[in-house]
Image 1 (spheres, rainbow, N blue to C red):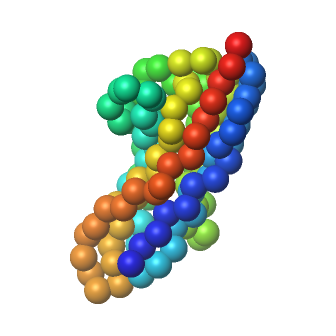
Image 2: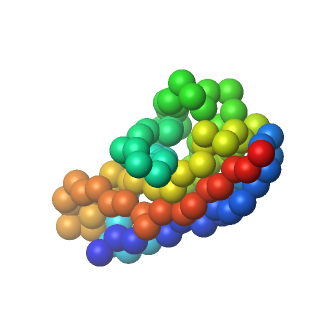
Length: 120
Protein backbone atom coordinates (compact mmCIF):
# COMPACT_ATOMS: atom_id res chain seq x y z
CA UNK A 1 0.00 0.00 0.00
CA UNK A 2 1.36 3.41 -1.02
CA UNK A 3 0.03 6.71 0.23
CA UNK A 4 0.59 10.20 -1.19
CA UNK A 5 -0.17 13.07 1.16
CA UNK A 6 -0.43 16.59 -0.29
CA UNK A 7 -0.22 19.78 1.73
CA UNK A 8 0.29 23.49 1.23
CA UNK A 9 -2.85 24.51 -0.59
CA UNK A 10 -4.85 27.51 0.50
CA UNK A 11 -6.23 30.92 -0.32
CA UNK A 12 -3.94 33.49 -1.93
CA UNK A 13 -4.32 36.82 -3.68
CA UNK A 14 -3.48 37.25 -7.37
CA UNK A 15 0.27 37.58 -7.75
CA UNK A 16 0.96 35.65 -4.58
CA UNK A 17 2.81 32.40 -4.01
CA UNK A 18 2.16 28.98 -2.55
CA UNK A 19 4.31 25.89 -2.12
CA UNK A 20 2.71 22.48 -2.39
CA UNK A 21 4.27 19.35 -0.95
CA UNK A 22 3.53 15.68 -1.54
CA UNK A 23 5.02 13.03 0.73
CA UNK A 24 5.02 9.40 -0.40
CA UNK A 25 4.99 6.57 2.08
CA UNK A 26 4.39 2.83 2.10
CA UNK A 27 5.81 -0.21 0.35
CA UNK A 28 8.02 1.67 -2.09
CA UNK A 29 11.28 0.40 -3.51
CA UNK A 30 11.89 3.39 -5.75
CA UNK A 31 9.89 6.27 -7.18
CA UNK A 32 10.09 6.97 -10.89
CA UNK A 33 8.32 9.96 -12.41
CA UNK A 34 6.28 12.21 -10.14
CA UNK A 35 3.95 14.96 -11.17
CA UNK A 36 1.35 17.54 -10.32
CA UNK A 37 -2.02 17.71 -12.01
CA UNK A 38 -4.93 20.03 -11.41
CA UNK A 39 -8.65 20.02 -11.91
CA UNK A 40 -10.63 23.22 -12.05
CA UNK A 41 -14.41 23.16 -11.47
CA UNK A 42 -16.17 21.63 -14.46
CA UNK A 43 -12.91 20.73 -16.19
CA UNK A 44 -10.88 17.58 -16.69
CA UNK A 45 -7.72 16.85 -14.74
CA UNK A 46 -4.76 18.42 -16.55
CA UNK A 47 -1.02 18.09 -16.32
CA UNK A 48 0.80 20.88 -14.51
CA UNK A 49 4.35 19.54 -14.30
CA UNK A 50 6.33 16.33 -14.06
CA UNK A 51 9.81 15.41 -12.89
CA UNK A 52 11.76 12.22 -13.43
CA UNK A 53 13.90 10.52 -10.81
CA UNK A 54 16.89 12.11 -12.52
CA UNK A 55 15.44 15.61 -12.28
CA UNK A 56 14.23 16.15 -15.84
CA UNK A 57 11.20 18.45 -15.74
CA UNK A 58 8.26 19.15 -18.00
CA UNK A 59 5.69 21.93 -17.63
CA UNK A 60 2.36 22.88 -19.08
CA UNK A 61 2.68 26.03 -21.17
CA UNK A 62 0.28 27.85 -18.86
CA UNK A 63 2.63 27.59 -15.87
CA UNK A 64 6.07 27.86 -17.48
CA UNK A 65 8.15 30.55 -15.85
CA UNK A 66 5.82 30.76 -12.83
CA UNK A 67 5.83 27.26 -11.32
CA UNK A 68 8.82 25.13 -10.35
CA UNK A 69 8.61 21.41 -9.67
CA UNK A 70 11.26 19.72 -7.56
CA UNK A 71 11.74 16.60 -5.47
CA UNK A 72 13.77 15.30 -2.57
CA UNK A 73 14.47 11.65 -3.37
CA UNK A 74 15.84 10.95 0.10
CA UNK A 75 12.54 12.07 1.63
CA UNK A 76 10.27 10.69 -1.13
CA UNK A 77 8.76 14.16 -1.33
CA UNK A 78 7.60 16.21 -4.28
CA UNK A 79 7.21 20.00 -4.31
CA UNK A 80 5.56 22.62 -6.47
CA UNK A 81 6.55 26.24 -5.97
CA UNK A 82 3.85 28.42 -7.47
CA UNK A 83 4.61 32.11 -8.02
CA UNK A 84 2.69 34.91 -9.72
CA UNK A 85 -0.56 33.05 -9.18
CA UNK A 86 -3.54 33.95 -11.33
CA UNK A 87 -7.28 33.38 -10.81
CA UNK A 88 -7.15 30.74 -13.55
CA UNK A 89 -4.79 28.69 -11.38
CA UNK A 90 -7.72 28.00 -9.05
CA UNK A 91 -8.12 24.21 -8.89
CA UNK A 92 -7.67 21.10 -6.84
CA UNK A 93 -4.04 20.05 -7.23
CA UNK A 94 -3.21 16.34 -7.25
CA UNK A 95 0.11 14.62 -6.78
CA UNK A 96 0.90 11.52 -8.85
CA UNK A 97 3.77 9.05 -8.66
CA UNK A 98 4.97 6.05 -10.63
CA UNK A 99 6.92 3.72 -8.41
CA UNK A 100 8.36 0.24 -8.01
CA UNK A 101 6.92 -1.65 -5.06
CA UNK A 102 9.08 -3.70 -2.70
CA UNK A 103 7.94 -6.84 -4.55
CA UNK A 104 9.01 -5.44 -7.91
CA UNK A 105 5.74 -4.21 -9.41
CA UNK A 106 5.37 -0.93 -11.32
CA UNK A 107 2.37 0.99 -10.00
CA UNK A 108 0.92 4.46 -9.92
CA UNK A 109 -0.84 6.31 -7.17
CA UNK A 110 -2.73 9.60 -6.72
CA UNK A 111 -2.94 11.84 -3.70
CA UNK A 112 -6.25 13.05 -2.34
CA UNK A 113 -5.81 16.59 -3.68
CA UNK A 114 -5.30 20.01 -2.14
CA UNK A 115 -7.36 23.08 -2.96
CA UNK A 116 -5.70 26.21 -4.33
CA UNK A 117 -7.88 29.30 -4.49
CA UNK A 118 -6.66 32.54 -6.07
CA UNK A 119 -8.73 35.68 -5.65
CA UNK A 120 -8.45 39.08 -7.29
